[in-house]
Amino acid sequence: MIHMNIDLTGKTALVTGATGQLGRVMARTLAACGADIVIHYHKNETKATELLEEIQSLGRKAIIVKADITDEQSVLSMQRITYEHFTSVDVMVANAVSQYKWTTILEQAPEDYLNQFQSCVMQSVLLFKAFVPRMIDNRYGRIIGINTECSMQNLPTQSAYVAGKRGMDGLYRVLAREVGEHQITVNQIAPGWTISEQDRLSESEIQPEHSKNVPLRRRGTDQEVSNAVAFLASDLASYITGVYLPVAGGNVMPTI
Image (cartoon, rainbow, N blue to C red; front, side, top):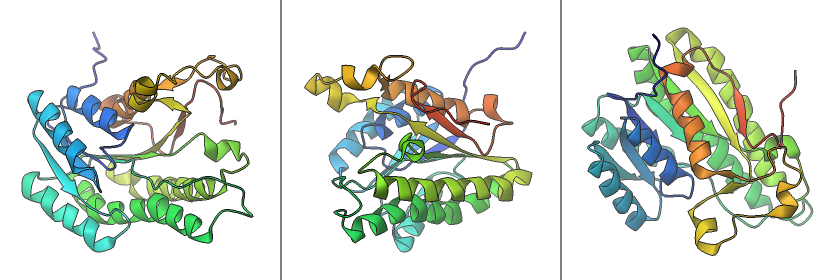
């Protein structure tokens, strides 16, 4: 009898942007599956501390690490602190992303494109260089990038976001080919417009104009996105790599 349990006991997971709306649920979910957690944050130390206490209450080991994920020395400092507490990072979730006001290409500031490239592409490059070598030594690793359904939509005002995320997509596909022989999987999850804690507090979960065009006729939740992260982090997904997986209720559908 095969038991299909997601069991991450004995694994260490790093989640960047773990204090964000999606990141905190990802961290909680991975911890609930048994993983110890490296909680990365950039500015929100209060939320990082709250999340640390919450994860420790589950009986998991956890640390918080402040870092600028677009700066090489800051990422190397995060690597050093992480390895002082854990022997390796088995699961790495690149979730952090920069925020700015979306507008048309003609009106979007050039620095917004550079900033998005830094937070999508260079974050991943720096994380790979810092943590993948030890995964190679261990012949084990689960790398998960948080992309977006926008990468397939290409709608007005999405240009800087799409440019950064599509660049990220290419990077992850190349890495999947480069490290596959070491039994390291490299995948992406692409959330749709997701209901988060912020929506629940503002009672803005229901968006009929958006949902009427989604095959499942609703918005997804932060927990549903996190469930997909947990699956790809687990050994149930040991033969899945190079995937761009929308968690978007069918709003976008990759084709063959």
